[in-house]
Structures are given as structure tokens and as C-alpha cells.
Length: 151
Image: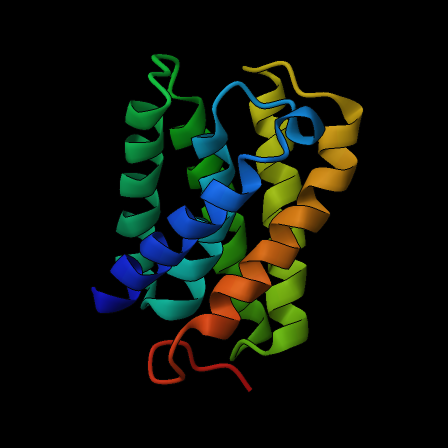
């Protein structure tokens, strides 16, 4: 649980930095950008069962923070989390290139799903995952090595 709280705290700090880029992201609420980093943190730092429940709870919390009654964040985090968990199960122990790929893939899928509920531009779909990946790598690099076990 300490890993989850550290990831959330670091992600919120980095979200404050990301709030400077509202024109680039074209998102109605900056909390929607927490989804990809939270999903990858749950997949990499937690066991499978804990990660599944953590991802669902993260989606519910994001829906509450964004006051979205359609459940878009819950749907996006659940689908991308299931795909990320399956990918990690197939590929084995996480390493840095896999973490970068997961961050890019989860962010891109998350944005595609959210684009059906919220108006996202093409620039947000193309450039947004790169920035999510950059800030996600910063989050994971700052975590203690006892929490995140990456080769």
C-alpha cells in the first residue's frame, strides 16, 4: 500500500506540472491524465489480484474527481489495466523498455477510449502519450528500488 500512496503522491505533483500544458492536452479535467500512470504503477508494483482491484478503484476515484457520471475513467482504466496485466503476464518481469512501452501503450489506449466521451484533439492523441511516458518515467525513477523491482 505504501507503493500506491507514493505513486499517487508523485503523480499528483507531476500533474501540477502538467497543468501548465492545457492547450496541448485538450482535456476538460487534468485528473484524467492520472489514469495511465496509475494503471502502469498498479501493474508493475502490485501483485495481480491487488492490481486488478487497485485499477478499478483508481477508475472510480478518477470518475469522482472529474465528476464524470458516464464512468469513462472506470472503463478506460479497467480495459487498459486488463491489457497491461495480460501483457506483463506474457512478457515476464518488468524492465525499463517494457515500462516505457506500457506507459506509451496504456496512455494511447486510455486517450482513445476517453476520446469517445470527451473531445480530444489529434495532437492530444499523438503528443500526449509521449508526455505521459516522460512524466511516468520520472515517477518510476523517483520511486525507491524496494517498491519497484525493474531490471
